[in-house]
Image (cartoon, rainbow, N blue to C red; front, side, top):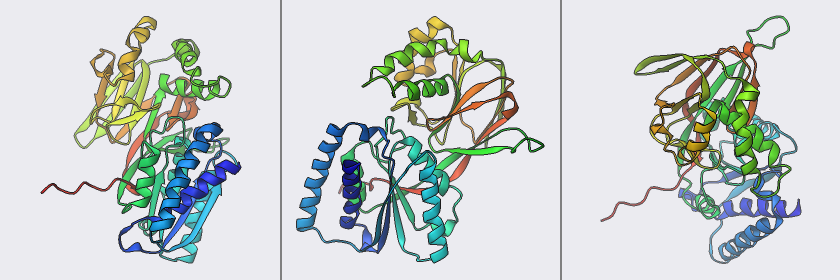
Length: 365
């Protein structure tokens, strides 16, 4: 834990040297999941700490410091804790009304980022207006991280801290309210939500990487995923896709998977190009055992659109009717859906959460 604290405090100190325009006062909160994939290798962590300390030493020697009012590092203790920490930050700011600009840094994987964003997605506009988020690439997949490298993430902290608003998927499922029922649930995804084979692979990956060292678990997952149909026994599914351009209906669709992204051009599963184009919905119908083996590489390379089982669509809402048990994943977090959880609805929400992005390049003269 000492190394994790050292790294988190180093990231926190970087914010004191940012060149944000006008150098306005800043409140910084760093939310750390000590169980994130990055923290599992002490050798890799020690190497990154040495890199970070070298950069900080240079900054301390030659860079002016901006005014940071409060700089706090929070450590999560259990699943769901990152969301509670974020809700507490919002509650205190709403109560105190300081009006000071806030930077929230997520030190974890896609699951940690999902928890933080799930707290932010429903926050009051006046709180979100002053809050910026940076999601570091510290997990296994890092498909929602705002930088693909550590150097890129540090540059976002030290730079002008330009932002881009990002949206969300609101996923609604569960039985109707009534005796013995808590009613419909609402969950969020900030990259991709999907139903079927890929969600099953998420579950296998989560279980196997805990017990198989290194990347060897990936081969076991590939083999085990071939037996998905024996486990799930897919049944016909009815799907309605709605957008500004109208509606389309796909009936009696026997799924391998149904994928919806916040937008097109999205990756998941460690930067696999499941949505390689502008379309944000991908439907993959049932594939035979040998077809899965032969065409696995096309899915990894984002070329699966050429397969007869695959279709892409644009949608702001996807509604699914189904009568069986099947897995759902939201940014890598798994939920097993039962027949009574349907219909399930996935809606693209307007962009509200401001995340750090690289500054636009200056036009050439």
